[in-house]
Every structure is written in C-alpha cells, then in structure tokens.
Image (cartoon, rainbow, N blue to C red):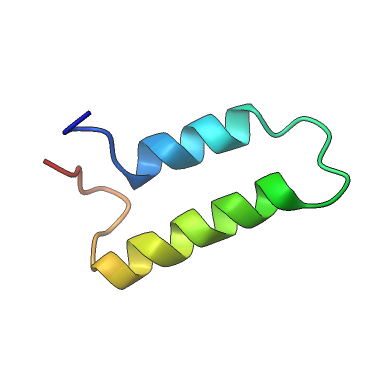
Length: 48
C-alpha cells in the first residue's frame, strides 16, 4: 500500500464509475484531484 497513490485511487474510481445518478463517484474523483493538488504532487509522481 505504500506505493498506492492518487493516480491509483483515481483509476479505481473511474473504473467503477458506471451509472452515477447522484454524482457521488464523480465527486470522489474531484476530491482525489483536489487532494493531489493540495499535496503538491503532480500526476506523474508516485507516493512512496
């Protein structure tokens, strides 16, 4: 789990999106993007 980063969470969330009538899954992706930007990591960096 030490190498599991924001990109991995985003990929899982997008892969499970399916029908999203209330927008909760889309909101999760938005929050992951925000958390990544606040952490100072870029999309290419891996959490170690």
